[in-house]
Amino acid sequence: MSKLDRSPVTVIGGGVAGSTAAIALSRHGLPVTLIDEQPSAGGQIFRAPSSYARQTVPPNHEFSGGDALRQKLATSNVRVRLSTRVWGLSPSLTLDLLGPDGMDQIPPSTVVVANGATERFFPFQGWTTPRITGLAGASILMRNGGTLPGQSVVVAGSGPLLFSVAHQVLEMGGKVTAIIDSGNRADWARLGAMLTLDSSRLTQAAAWMLRLRKAGIPVHHRSFLSAAEETETGLLLTVSDMDHPERHHFYTAEAAACGYGLKPSTLITRTAGVQHRYDSLGGYLEPVTDVAGRTSRPDLYVTGDAAGIRGMAVARLRGLVTAHAVAHDRRLISAKAYARLTTTPLRHLRRLDAVSRRMLPLMNAGRTIGARLPDDTIVCRCERVKAGTLRTAIQSGAEDLNQLKAWTRCGMGPCQGRMCEDSARALLTAACNSTPEEAGSFTARIPFFPLPLTSVTGEFAYSDIPLPKAAPL
Image (cartoon, rainbow, N blue to C red; front, side):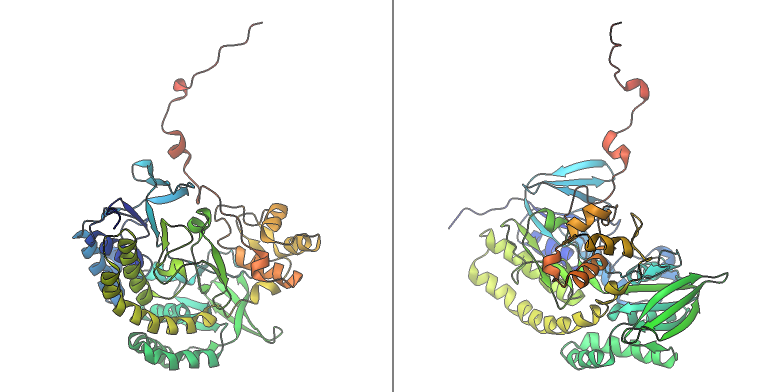
């Protein structure tokens, strides 16, 4: 047998999957560093609430689950680096960090990527007003900050988060003016039948729907927000029918929360050169992994929602199995021990994964919206690129996303296409009659997010700058 390998492991992301993996890895005797950009671990689901939120938001499983997870981390041997972001990655897997103490690096090591998901958004006319936020952003505002996005809110988009946010608004005493769902009743009914395999999610979903029904909230299926106009009191929102766009409903509200499901965060894995594929069911790019999170790079694993959107319960199981896989690959445990440790988690994983796969079409129900945007709709908020500009570039010969990016600057802004890539891809594939695989994705670049200038230059006085001697006359 090869010599035992106890070299360090770095886990990126302190959510359910990342924290679970880090704790399990440390129990295998590995030195583990967990990096998370938030001031407390927990990720999006178990994000630590503010003291104000603990007083104003009714107790819930997110608070208790997050507290328990953070307590387990605190009593483990995991080195936790909070408020720290990974802004770069070298071909050798050296990680570039920015944290409370400034710039830093972690030399090449085994890396477990568990940086979760990004919310998907399809723009509409007027979507850049500050009164409109994402569904995930609205949820964070309420759960973490204890603050409503508005006293009256229109909730729009697709997927389970749509109804979760509506429930949270009611729970905090706000009014849900309407729910605009791009999915259809039949898909929800099929999901409801599938949820018998996941009793906890079935119980939660039933409670949400009962409360929303009792509140008498109008629900529009197969519909989407097509326009928003600011008024003196809030927003005037136009709702269009997906199958008959000429049919409209109008609502007024103080704010709107809108989002079309989630997609894996892939900036790190794409930069690392990991093989990716397009999941047509979920409508997103995901890294190619085996059931344990192994990728095409031997020292890089991906786990949790970063490997494909499946939800919290699956993320926890994935994180556990990935940790055991790393220990097995390091020869720290035998194949027999690995099988013993993973048999039960993998059995649960297969059952819950079937339920989660049923949710993907509901989260991807808005996939056609991006292709029907009016020409004057802003698609790339960072660079102010409109749908008409993209269509002109496509008509002029742009055949993939990176060519479209080069010709229009769409995707060149600080968000690196997080907000606009899906809409640009929808426009491109519709105009060229091509597949998402043929359209490709924006090339990831370093830094992954804007860096403060002082973090690069350090502090100095102008008198410290050496000046060259004047040229001779």
